Image (cartoon, rainbow, N blue to C red; front, side, top):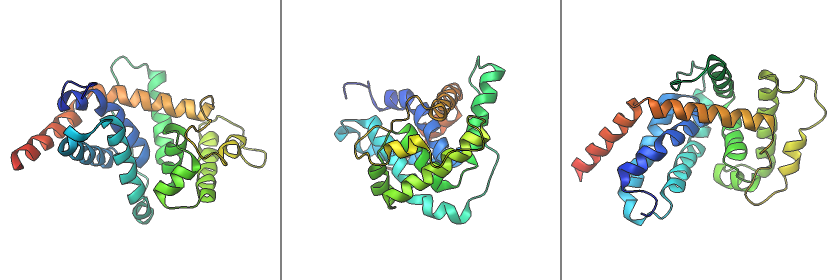
Length: 222
């Protein structure tokens, strides 16, 4: 594996960002850790054959949440999001990041899922539709609702808006990768919050210890 010395090196270098993205997908740290642990365990069993392990793990986590989103609708409840703050983070950075994370966590599961897949993963509407099992139109509708709620709640746009979101409309017909949201204020806010959270997980070694313990148990069972 040219990019990583071994599997443990891979875990150490990718776990924090993978876990931060998973929190954005599901809104709960415990659920995110479960999904990430499951993906890394699966990657460990396939390690010799994986050519792009990071992409494989990210896809596995994303598809886990795509599979479970239908069930989340039945048990979805708003909950307090407990996340670690990175060392050296200013109060302003923490307030901004936590505000975004908590606001994203308020979205219904499907809206949150589509938002992350399009704005952060950079998947096309058609790719999202195929993975999630909904129509392309439903992808656009869920994304528009999520963006409207977040931009209003985060104070990024006025509450009165013209018909439709021009950024949503601009990518509706795309079939290839690339969301077209790179300079969008909401996407920038999401990325900054994700990066802040990843730095926090990098400093908080608790989830790494739990993941290593699970891998150790897996090795002992083989």
